[in-house]
Image (cartoon, rainbow, N blue to C red; front, side, top):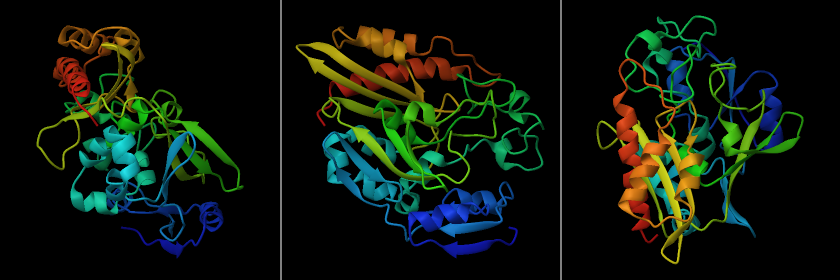
Length: 327
């Protein structure tokens, strides 16, 4: 690890001002410190933002707001989240390990970088790490990689479970810039696909700090589910994951949300399947068809064609679990 400067910020203003000098924000450090140890990232300095008051979880008239510095553990177990957004609780608890959830923050979770092995191996070409060098995963081992939204520049997937649930919940990300200006980014516009610039994971501007995440009120608390399919039961990233929510009225599906993880450079919201589900009865046959529809347009790489059929079945299973889940 290369030497770097270190300072603490007491408030948002101090944090974003430090970012002007090229310093990176340090919260839980569960991803950034690993990247620094591996030589993947070498920031000139770190500004510790753990002293900034951004860890509150509170209800507003139309939403629940979770602070960017609230720990994953505290967010998953907060009464407001467990009652109104159980899908998010399940997604967070499916991620990493208890030790990491104790340290990781909400802002860090949605901003974590891909776990593509070629991204971490500095001896290999990677457009995400070194723009213009190529993508080793295209012709390499790509079992864990994307089936949606990829191109020859990058086939990596976003690793966050939390972000998949946030996608299904229509969350918004609140940020503040080094000039003090604030803005709100809808989750669907927050993470990016690699075509324009594979080195970018999101639409944050230089120096911007995530302050909170807003979860609008919804009708899915009673019937929602997060399903994660992985190689082992703990501390493994998703081969495929599904965040599913249903609003059931009079024996029919009044509204639906379906978002996939492990299949693209960003959480992959499946609007076609959602539209198909509306007005239908919540049956196994309908859910199976929604699963097939969800994977339309998927393009397999050399080693990951199995993901398409796996995801079809996972969508159907998640919807079935959601339909029979009460909170």
